[in-house]
Image 1 (cartoon, rainbow, N blue to C red):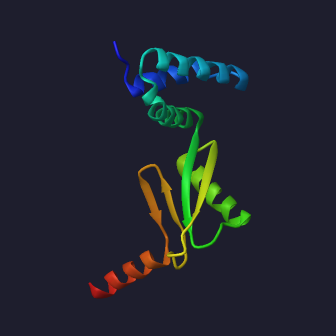
Image 2 (spheres, rainbow, N blue to C red):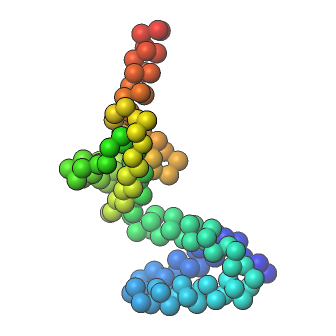
Image 3 (cartoon, rainbow, N blue to C red):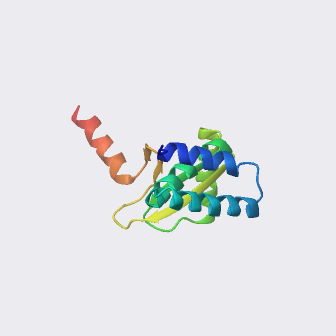
Length: 133
């Protein structure tokens, strides 16, 4: 019987939770051997991604992609982190800052499927729309 990506990821999570880092390393090594033995090593990347999503949810970790024109300064990073912790009741926030020079100003925050766009272009489009109505 072949297991699905979700089944593998859940099994890996159950085997890894409440373990030390060295124990987790051993679990992952054995898990990869199992995938290889079952002829499903090609699923490793998808299982890893699903495992990360499960781990983050269970541990209260929120990953956010923050798009800005310039690299975020520490004070702004801390403010965004504080906002995300509050909004999502997160224990920890991992921010990946993506610099996009096409953005005139403001911030775009992506968390999973959710998008918070406070960019200047978005604000101008909203203003134009309200004036046209």
